[in-house]
Length: 222
Image (cartoon, rainbow, N blue to C red; front, side, top):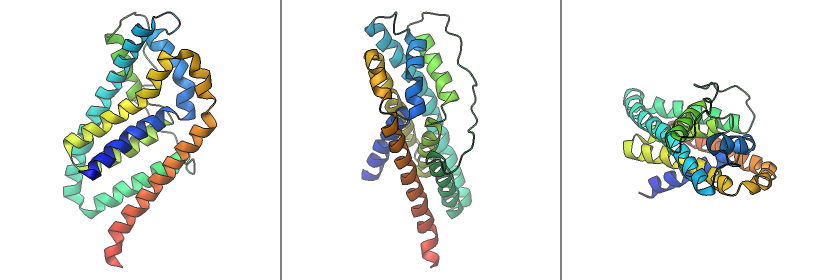
C-alpha cells in the first residue's frame, strides 16, 4: 500500500515538474490565451475553460495508463526478467534525455494545435486538451514516458490509471495558477533557471532507479 502511495505522489510531482520545465513555462501565456483568451475572459470563465482543458489531457493520460497496465502484464508474463531489463533500459534512456546527456527528437502524434475559432466554454477546451496531450512538449514528454514505464511495471490497471490521471492534474496545476493570476506569469518565468535544475535532478533520480533495477536483476547472479 505504501509502495503505491509513493508511486501516486511521484506521478503527481512528475506532472508538476513537467509543467515547470523551462519550455513548458515559455508556453504558459500561449496556452492560456489560446484556451480562454485570458485578456478578454472573466477569471471564472477562464478557470472553467482551463479545468476542461486539463480534463481533456487527463482523458488521454488515463487511456495511456490503461494501455501501460495491460501491455505491462502481457510482456511481464511473456518475457519475465527480461521485461525488467527492458523497462530499466527505457528509464535509463529517459533519464539521459532529461539530463541532456543524450539529445534526440521525440516523435509526436499531432504537429500543430487546432484553430481556435469558437468561444465554447467546455467542449473546445476539452478537445484542445486532448490535442495538447497527444502533441506533448519536448520537456514534459520524457517525464511522462518515465511515469508510463512505472505504470507498465506495476501491472495494476486501477493504479496505472490513477498514476497517469495524477500526472495530468500535476501538470495542470501551474496552468490553473497562472491562468487565475496572469499578471504573475512573468514572475513564474524568472524561475526558469531553478526549474531547469529541478528537471535535471529528476532525470538523475530516474537514472538511479534504472541502475537499481539492473542491480535487482543481476545481483542473484553474483
